[in-house]
Image (cartoon, rainbow, N blue to C red; front, side, top):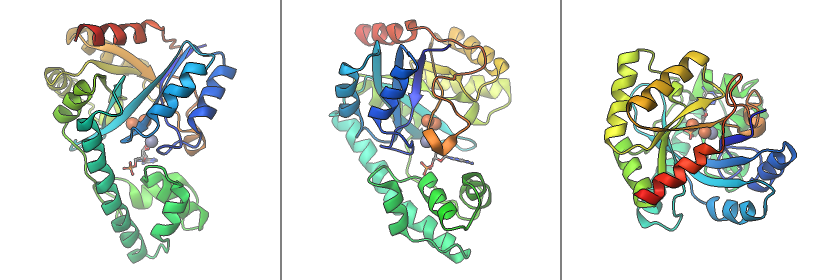
Length: 284
Ligand code: AMP
Ligand code: ZN
Ligand code: FE
Ligand code: FE
């Protein structure tokens, strides 16, 4: 069984379990190390550090998964070991939060115009203080019977290119990588498959650019990656001297097909991944 999973979401973003619940579940599974990497927020970090120190796990990493500007698919960059009090990091994420607060009511307006009657208040209530995202909007749509599932909410309304989609504030990969470094952390390209780049040459061009911008590693192992994907990402990591990492992208009940600890068929990660991150920070 794989016992290292460095990409989990908690109730601080769009996961359904609290950091304490995630840690408890990992303990019950006999895991060695986990990383809690909420979207565009660092509000969970101090709590995760505190809980992690008492946990029956070798290590509990607190990270942040930052949304980068990217034209086609999705580019997410995960930062581990960041200082949650770093001004540059706080400023960048505050700008993201402001962007979300502007975007979310616009999505609701579009939904209303399309005949889906939900309110922003209902969405805020659903998010319950977390960083508000489209999954919260989708949940309200399901609860009110506008759609049958989260998938239908995204496919019909909320996905990029669908009629209620509204873009939100992000930052360039260059800026995100620089800010993570300034905050004392290491940066990883999350689940590269979600870039939606099928062509080998194009993918390599992107990875080369990110490496040039100071990226530390690639999340080569993810629940969504095929063996062929993994092979390709390992090759790129070696070529561009990038570290390797892996995680399931577990969100709890919101995405029930993703299992805590599963990072790809037959893949088991070693604690060395974390050791190498720590070494990289020391030499910086
Ligand atoms: P937001 O942060 O509001 O832009 O929403 C991003 C969240 O929505 C992430 O957790 C994604 O995994 C989730 N998401 C994006 N596209 C889809 C989709 N087509 N189906 C289900 N969830 C999605
Ligand atoms: Zn998410
Ligand atoms: Fe992601
Ligand atoms: Fe994620």
